[in-house]
Length: 191
Image 1 (spheres, rainbow, N blue to C red):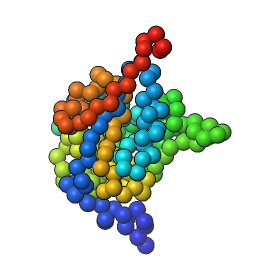
Image 2: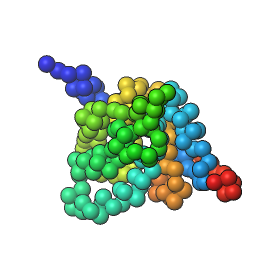
Image 3: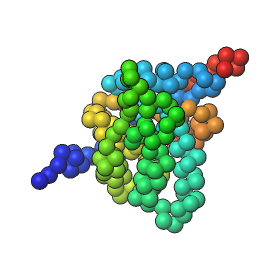
């Protein structure tokens, strides 16, 4: 018997077949409300975005993974490390307090979650045969998340990455030189 996930996997094109999204980075300083803005944006039908900012350390982590793994760098290793270190992308309860997404709803007992097996399968399918790079991985993570949510990725031409911290923006712009940046700030006295 073929499961729904297995059927979907056979229908996923490789990364080259997804339309190149317009890329924007959301950065902030001083408790300026970027998470609130992001929460308004991430429900828009034309935007591909992962809730909160569980990916904010992806760039410094990536550099560490490359050094740690060395010659054994492969998508399998990267996916395993990612699902461990950035587990709140899969289930917002895995890193409590990171973004408040583990306490949603009126009773504060709801959270954001996608099926890890599906997420891993989508990543493997999207990245299969591609050279290992953080740019490819960042795109694939967003696409895999969207597929887990059942989104039509072709109808989401804008990808917003809530990188959160200005210090990580340089690497992101190296990967996506035509990115737009939304920088939110607040008076230091208010923080």
